[in-house]
Image 1 (cartoon, rainbow, N blue to C red):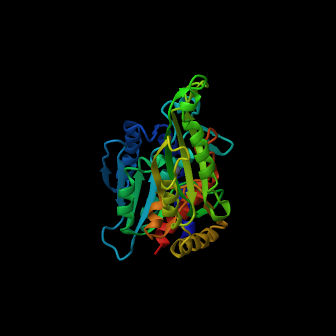
Image 2 (image 1 turned 180 degrees about the vertical axis):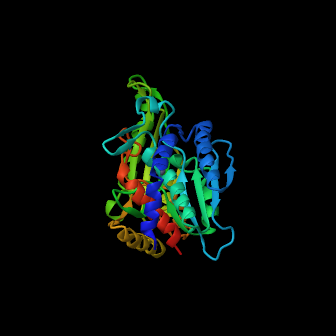
Image 3 (image 1 turned 90 degrees about the horizontal axis):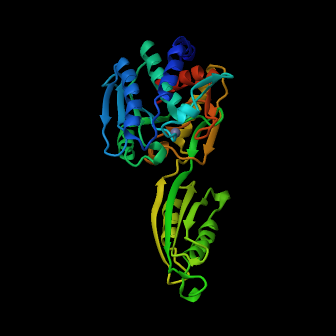
Amino acid sequence: MAMQELAKVVRANRARMYARIRELVEVESPSENREAVNRAGNVAETWIKALQGHLKRHKSALYGDVLEARFGPARSKRGRVLLLGHLDTVWPIGTLAKMPWRETGGKFWGPGVLDMKAGVVMALEAVAALHQLEMMRPVTLLLNSDEEIGSPASRAITERIARECSAVFVLEPAQGLAYKTSRKGVGHFDLRVRGVASHAGVDFERGHSALLEMARLVQQVSAWSNPPTGITVNVGVISGGTRSNVIAAECRAEVDVRIVKAGDATRMERMFHSLKTTDKACKLTMSGGINRPPMERKPGTVALFRKARSLAKEMGLVLEEAATGGGSDGNFTAALGVPTLDGMGAVGAGAHADHEHVVVKHLVERTALLAGMIAAAD
Ligand SMILES: [Zn+2]
């Protein structure tokens, strides 16, 4: 494998890669803002067209367009590789004013730089290098627009395209220096208790506190956490009541659930749906479920990782393997049984945090490794 050749081409084009990362970071694209995400999509579209990619923009009523770009020969004996990324970020419009693009200490800083605008640019640079060396195979680059809010609109598109592919490479940030071969599944539940309000002094006994009832439910669901099995239940938000002298009529809680095994999804959903109030005058309603199935560590994914490790070795790099509790669109593709390797984007730290950055010195080698994997995967 021509890893040195690939690295050389990527390195020769690095000024373009760095400039593009900045350009994309400077187009803010929060998931909830359709027009803003589409502006980032327009930037990516220009680059896709410059690489002679066949582009389809999947329109959505609520979110930005999902960009599906096909590269390489239309007919080939070789399977199609899916490069999976997203254009949206968690950062609201105006963040750049407080957290502008910066280049200091060998790092690029800015909202969404690590998660995952650098990864999007790396994918295009990997395709460009393969073009230049005439090593292209069929590749689809899919850029979603709603990943940071759970991929409600793009999930079906991702799953449909993944089914046509023999491998999926996810451009989410690396974990330290490692690629990710497993991810926890993610669920979200919204609990609402409606009680009976009354005056805490005048009419105490006529009230039924939604808060007290919710407190019991919080205890109950929190006890389902069992870290050794990978199951965690976190009640992260709770709100309710109006004043201290009123017995609370309403209370609401938001719960995050993580699982490691696919079979735990229905089990946890069943447990949540079997919850009952202790005080029968309080009514419980619930919505939600397991949104992302776990990405289990399967043989196809492990085989991809081993290939990546040996290509990395050719470049003098040691590639580690990691598991994470966070979800990505890779959870969906892995659950379909398509070998999925994740964390193939940039190296850095501070995703979703004020100190979000990528480490510049890893960009060339990681992009070359991604290109090598596109060429080498079965
Ligand atoms: Zn991401």
